[in-house]
Length: 383
Ligand SMILES: NC(=O)c1ccc[n+]([C@@H]2O[C@H](COP(=O)([O-])OP(=O)(O)OC[C@H]3O[C@@H](n4cnc5c(N)ncnc54)[C@H](O)[C@@H]3O)[C@@H](O)[C@H]2O)c1
Image (cartoon, rainbow, N blue to C red; front, side):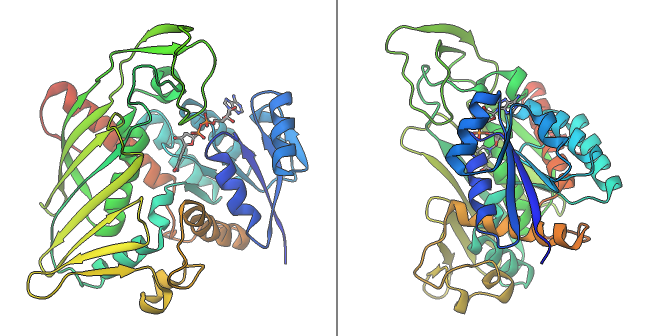
């Protein structure tokens, strides 16, 4: 069996999730990693037992033994690194959001499509097994007509004005924060499970902490770093902590989403309900192995993840029997397994089962529409 060699750029919070998934795949070698500077890269290569390391992304892309590049760095670096990697003939798996502007994302999507290479965006939440089960149930008509989809994505790791991360800086993160960082996951997931396509948005964004205290020492993603010592600089914040968004879908149906990164006690909770003409569904990412099914005329049901009770398409991405819970790492494994099947065949399936650069580009177009809607306080439609 031909082995495929992967290179990972960025090993903070999410890079190790990619590494962990790839190490569980029988025909993939994590050949090298790159991080910011030789010292850090060397340390991380030792931590993860990866044979080669590079102190910058360009050197990893220039390694001609690498077939596929994973981009796990702050958002502003996605576009230049993805473009270079594609032009160097590498398959690319990029973290979300694909870029910081829709223009960059479109260029990447077009370059990727022209290249004939495999390209994917790590919208991993689609790959919780019950999300594929729900997608199958909806597409087979089990829910009837979908009246509406409503929900939220709430976090508390930026609750205090002393919480700080690169995501708060627009030059690193882009012009949107809560919407691009977590809203993109919700919108991708909702379009995937419901089959509905967002056509128009009406958004109201808010920044609860217009000034934050940036610790003089760098902080890790999700780290609870209080600037207790007074060693901080006051930094003005222009991106949103909160968003309320109304959606109209292409078929005229409605959706509502609340996003917040300042909801005390909500760690990383994506939740939604989907109301159909036959039954409803409710799911949340912190209990991913349970799907609530709501009925008017008979008792409600909690469907537990169990390959023996799921549709074959969903059972196919479950790695364990019922009662053996699958989590965040398993979702990435399921996504990357489908991506690497295409890499093994040498080209992307048409259409790919996994989220592609076209999906990443669509998210950026919707994000820009949401920013414009909040600014102008009116409905905005996709062209
Ligand atoms: N899909 C998901 O569930 C998910 C979860 C978390 C983060 N993400 C995305 O992953 C990306 C990274 O987020 P994170 O939370 O892991 O960030 P992080 O800050 O924890 O890690 C970023 C990594 O990139 C490295 N880096 C920074 N600049 C670099 C450079 N110039 N060259 C090489 N390496 C560099 C850092 O040293 C660090 O190792 C973001 O785009 C984020 O949106 C996705």
